[in-house]
Length: 240
Image (cartoon, rainbow, N blue to C red; front, side, top):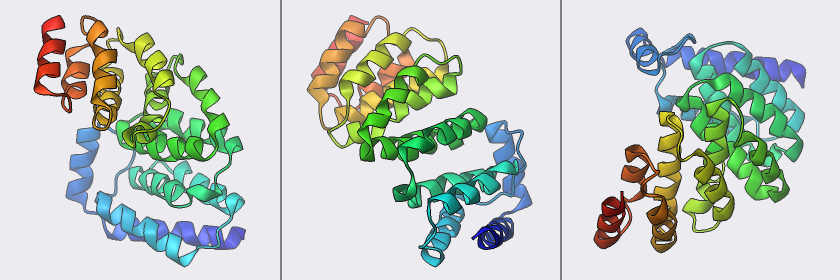
């Protein structure tokens, strides 16, 4: 199906270019401090392109998917990489535990929250939910020198925890080890996961956060306490 995949890449690129504007491209590149080329395509338009591909090429198998996303990603264009993440999510059932190494490479090459967050939370997180033994790789990610990979280890647990399920004990270990970090994107990720977990299990998050209030950054605390009761929020802030 190599020729068909090449045609799909051409179709996607043409659509992304057609829906972009130079003005938005400049603004987004500045905002993200991006070194990639930008077409200036909006996120809704990128999702629309991805959904069209999913409808038209429902039979795409695992190998074709990997070839397709690899070809899209290889060209350093922001929107091509964004649509890659959307396609990986839409074709999530094609992914296998052995694809974790491929996904890790994409995460390492992302270098921005705009790509890392959905790739880690939706794609990697979804793969782990379907294949729970794959979660072991996060132990290595959580101690990686690259803070984007450490952030990915946290966010890969996000969606399951948001649903009131998931591995909070594992998240707790990772977050506790990273709680003293100065990196904003780590501090924000810890707070983000705690906030979304607290929406269904506020008492559990409160009990975890209270003895760590003196260590947690303001960024982490501001996010984490949002769903807590007024009394719980006041107690955590007083403990700090």
